[in-house]
Length: 274
Image (cartoon, rainbow, N blue to C red; front, side, top):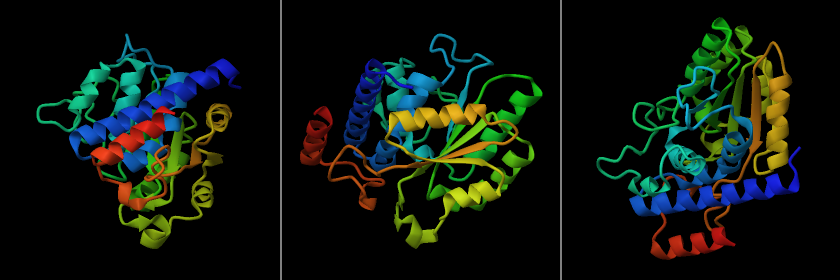
């Protein structure tokens, strides 16, 4: 349950993260704003309400892990980590610049708070499986959260990994599918239809929850239900809007990997500031 003060705080954090995403991509003149904006609210609840992490003890063996399998949406992750205090917000302006540690895809060896290098689509769930299985074998209580795109789950490796998640009863694993229904080439249905996503994960032995990925209460409730589920992994299908928060980006596949021009940037920042 989220009280009024907590809700207002999460809304403020989410707004700040979205503004940082747009600023980063505009400053770099490249990047992926659409999917970053759609997963922002999930990230906000994860990092400011759910995760067992400590900025001052970043390598704690008992910390929860996050794998951003759709690594091209790094602006959302970097903005959230900066908002959380893992590194200075000013560094976000170096995104995708030469010699910056904030490159286009997350690098665990260079970026504070990043648990896994990612960007090669389809591989994140396999990695998350390994983390979750290691936690089981080492009798650790940490949880692993893996964020996939709905276009990404067209990759066959995702389903091989899903089979393993279920086989090893990884109830410390939570897969979050950012279901905004768009990818770089258009609608996911037209490119390679993954629906019904919920039934597919169910058939692979997952506990499945379908939620509004922009509703903080529903997101938090889903995380709580995932923690209560024993003997099987959980998949949260988060129904989202690509480009959420910026009117001309919303539900537009063209904003999958495109930077706003100056006038577009001004309009976006004005909208996000309201």
